[in-house]
Image 1: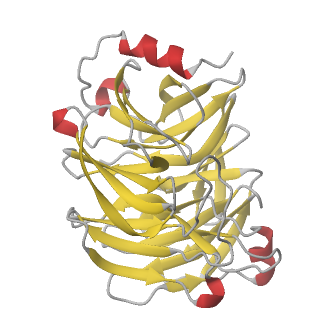
Image 2: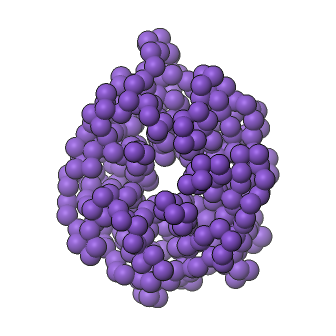
Image 3: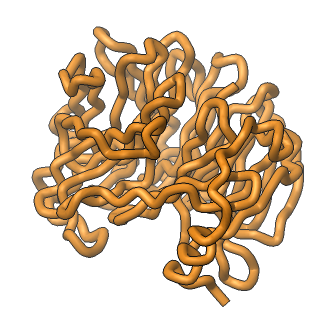
Length: 359
């Protein structure tokens, strides 16, 4: 039986709230992933780079993404958008350290990122009425007290990432005006996605806006290379059969480069890129489509390199030998160039994302 959120929170808040120590204390995981177990309950799992489990902890409801503290075995699990909470969990024993609830009228949108020293947490949010984008700012050293918010300079933000300079964020503004209580899109005809670079004071440093004919391409997920090259994955909200590009590359101060697969391959993706990652050496980038059962690889210059077919593949993260990928049927696999190797099949349905722990 799925644990109710109220029971889950009560039991964890009653447990010891001792501070977490380093990631070695929980088996040195490389990735975090949310999943649904065979009995319908939900978990957050720590995975090593060989796909073995380091830990498994209960979640009160379906998870989306997580983010990992850079030094402590502490993770934030986010509700799917539109959500009202994020949970800070001690990954040693599942103790709930904090439940983060944004101010009234805001919604949590499934992603977040820590500052490089772990002192701040940034959360992707929007106004429930109007979907104006916000970044919630939380003081980790002061018990995750909320200390402010920044504009995303767009609407419907989803993923955000800390830039390599350690002083700014890159934010995927999906451009979607959604109903306050569900995921219904209210502005398909007028939507406008953007990629915003914002400093910690909320100043807009740079912004990418797609061409008018692609205004229905929602920028959703991000990959980041150490030299500042950003990859962004998109989800098409327009007519079926249009086969728009679903991957973009951008470096601050330069024009964005959209990356096309051959028309037939693009059609198979069904207008949906679910996750994105650079490979281990940064020489290529890939996107996944659970709708199409496809993983598409591109060079760092945007040239199409090939496709991998895998039913319900979505989770994707950097691996030192290429990529780690997960699917909704419990599969975990290693992708190295054009070669794939199964690593493990779990009795779980992996959710959308594999999140790599820094370090």
